[in-house]
Image (cartoon, rainbow, N blue to C red; front, side, top):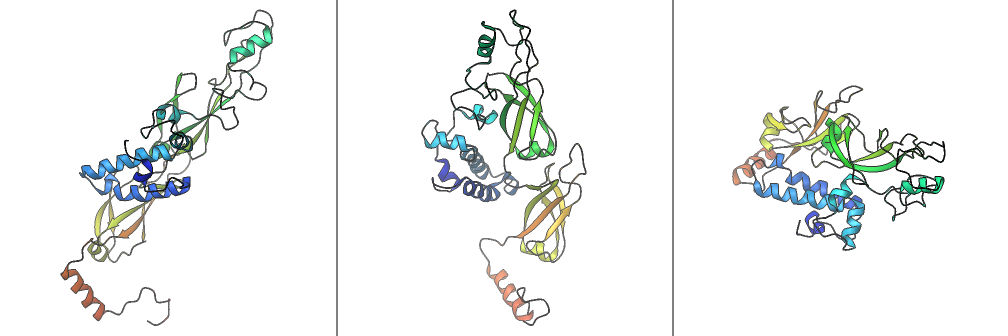
Length: 311
């Protein structure tokens, strides 16, 4: 990504994280490929926008970019995508192994300190029968919206370079913590390893939002489709479906797609709520203008009139 990510999203360098998120969602809705099938230019713009948000939407990546530690392409992107330093840890340490262990650069130093010699993780020291369970290690992992909604398997790279496979259950919530047993710090004196606790943050989606197991989205329709009714294509988390727009539908009207929301491993499947938005053409031709004038003269309709009042 060679261009300035701030310019791509359309915000100032002093913008807050919330402002960046709002600007990204607004622009992504207008550029999303579902709204421009076959348009290579719009697809390229959408991909550039997504790459810019991948950089600025992450607080640590943004800090590094602003400080000049990484360029606009984000060379540390793979590492930062898979884990973040535990919030309470020392920035100089690879991870925080828990209370009482913060002064050791490596877990093997703990063995050396306790038993007077260096011992490999998982190996009992010959000088003592003492055993202790390893500490739990905490990480943060960023998950795509659809992976959290539908479930997926993703590889997680730990600070020591080892990779583990993370199973993302369908319906995973933002901020939820997953426990990987035995993937934490090694035990002492041959004791069992601790667990890895993965706290998940979910990336926003340009088309979908979520309320519990309900998916919400928006579909643009034309003036004639609103007046006459139509069948239009609407995006769902499982792919496009045909949506019946009733005759006389107004902007903001909400249509329900039964069973098209989150289908969690436990619990009831949700629905999808599609909000209708009437979009007029960029240029109003004379025929459409004449039709509107004629309709206005013949029909006295005031949508702003209070219920039961007079126009």
